[in-house]
Image 1: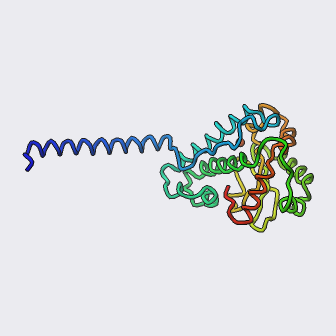
Image 2 (image 1 turned 120 degrees about the horizontal axis):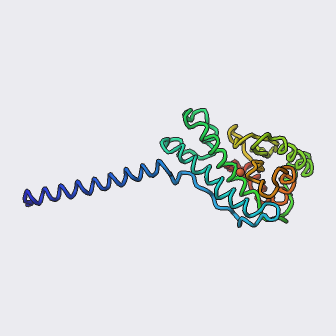
Image 3 (image 1 turned 180 degrees about the vertical axis):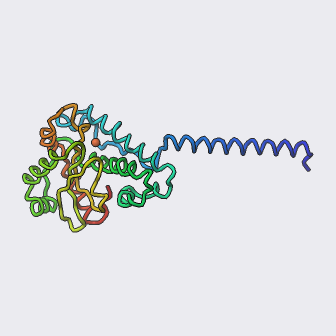
Length: 246
Ligand SMILES: [Fe+2]
């Protein structure tokens, strides 16, 4: 049987342990609220930052992925830190529900969630220059819906040149495999309309300014050298299967 002294010692020790655990959790929460590490995370680049040279330089890639994209991820997590229900949603679903997001964080979720989705797609659909041209079903869709690759490039570059300030140019794809061009300002994305993106190009100055300065048209033209058509074809097949995400 425990003596009263022993009992009080154990009670005190237990209380101290509990207090320590609670404090640690509290501190963890406080830390998490300042710098949450999730639920969204920066995807790794599927190649080295210099892989797209000479068309996109390694310094631009390093900053673009490691700093700009990371900031969108960090700020999205911060915005959702106190909104566990929204933080649990897949990104493409969250972006279709912006009108259900509390007004206080809606713009942050729109800009940073859009930024995270757009850049996650962007790294995937690029690769070292010298890749194969589109073929098979993808080529057929480009021919029938967008007038062929040359016409697509011409229209896509014109749409990219017309974006005032910062934004993106996309080719969207529906589940029947039909393609369409779409330009968006800022970090908006066709995902916000429940559509799916086959591929797209970032026309924010941070994507090209170090190498191309004000010559966005030159960047738009050169960018086609690093489109990874194999990756685009995989996204096309996923869209038709209903499994394409961001
Ligand atoms: Fe960007």
